Length: 70
Image (cartoon, rainbow, N blue to C red; front, top):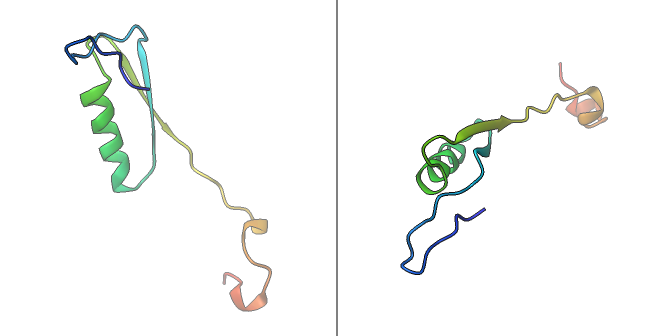
């Protein structure tokens, strides 16, 4: 979501009070959060960090015995 701009290119305040940023353990997530803060966030808005952690099950692994986890 890009913030609206005026004719002079200046950002106009966003009306939404909530900004959500998807993150994970990798370094680019820090960049995404910084970008959101620098480019989207205004005073009084809320930032929600969304982190989805996938739980691996036995069916997530190859069935080959040579690749089995010991």
